Length: 332
Image (tube, rainbow, N blue to C red):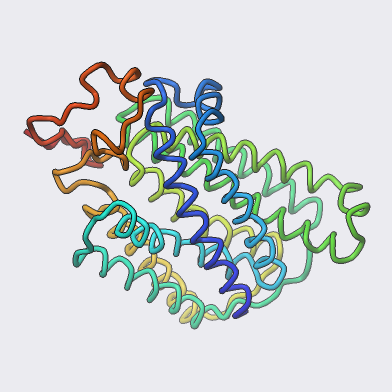
């Protein structure tokens, strides 16, 4: 399990770096292009987005390797460490300072993960899912994604980003499950055996749809909103898929189940605290809550100025308006 945790942590670092690069690249996209092919057309012209995509491919390789050595209920929760690496990136690359909220959030995530692994003691399951199990997972996942996408069509920007982030997380949880199946197929029969099954094609479909929803979430609103739901929903959905479809075993008994729920609650609380901190959420009153590249010189390129108006690169004379998750405006 130690090898799987190390590989998953490395994947989490690459994921955090990829998300930051892609979010910055999408900040100059035209307003209203979320959930539109125009968004991907814009992204493909951005070098930073392409570098981020390359990092996502490397992250996928590390995640697949981790799933080869460990269970879904081990690997996917470790990926919540992405937020810890996000804090490090924001501090080192964007020169932001760490406060007590960030430290509390990081401590809660680490404590929650450690508590879950200690209480649940995840073990290998009964093997690969049956056709009936895959059908149930596919139908449930599709229903969740469609409902979340429909919910994202209305509401404030933070809500649209959160709903699309959750939808992408469900698809990526399915993608991780299919990746685990693919590694087993590759181990037992090689690439010819892999492409003789439906799994790699479903893997490509869920990956492409998940990537599209993730880019839409990053552009739809604050990165804090999309990453909160994405980072929380992904491991929870993966644990459910691992236990129900792969038969992964968690330590039984009402006491241990209670400890599992408590540990996951602590982890999710840490995610909420960390993602809503001034550092990660950008709600300090000195930077926009939606733009990582908020500096008028470093954060805006010519396309950004053209998309947002001739005064887009001028410093604002007042504190920018900030939409809090409860929908109440804040600002001067």
